[in-house]
Image (tube, rainbow, N blue to C red; front, side):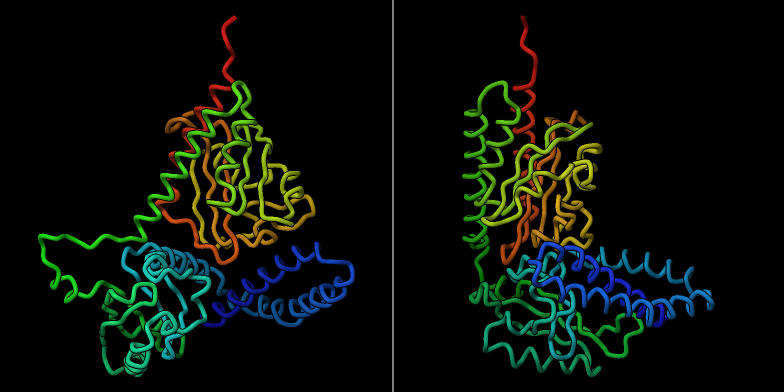
Length: 378
């Protein structure tokens, strides 16, 4: 079974590299020689390594067991990511291997950025040595530990870090599971009559969302009457820049058509505008089923299809998180269109609160579009 897991990891890495090669077709002509060399190297790797390994595993009959193991791994990975407690998996050197959604919210660091970096780098300097020492002791099998640490994001609030040893799968080395929770002594020191201290960061984000929704309402009421495309363009203009790096609007459900694409400066906006929405799985799913989608670090490069140049849109736009919501006035009602938002680079991923705000605005946009296309009585 370790051979099967190793083969699966190598195959997944190969597929990611192939996706990058496909997106590299947009590089200047002078650099295509380097891309061609990389493609030939990958083909040689398949012929010399992956294919012989596949034949050997097929002869040994390990594929059926591997399928069940992969399903279980997907389930465990989903449980890890959705766990309400902030949880981080590190090695004996405190290097982050996995970080769930709750931990990214607590630390203020994206999982993609944290992976491969020491968790001590996100702590105050005074706590780093103690945390590193306790992590090494747990990894050596000396028992579970816990200690108070202070995050750089909120140095005045102590956090209780509980460390326990964990052996992931058939890996030879022991990893350390870190659970982060508010320190009990800090909570006990606060008088109960005063209640919890206000979170200024959360209050600021909430105020920004209220300003955004106010701007959206103003734009929808000011949009030209009887013009659904103008409504979508006005809504996209409000969201672009201040809320999302990319805003893509598609009108209709049965046969969606792309009406508006706003992106960063010098971005391939024209190629995305020329894309057929029917070739975007996320758009098709939202238009048919009316289900919103929130993804952080999208794993499938084909989730939003390819642009007019043939490159994956998510890869070419360097998308780190996305929101794809149907424009419908009520639950299970007719879909007037689909709105897709991208964030890229070092910008924080979309939060659940932001997704909720976009869901509310999508209903308002749907009402404005429906009013503009409703036939007037003669």
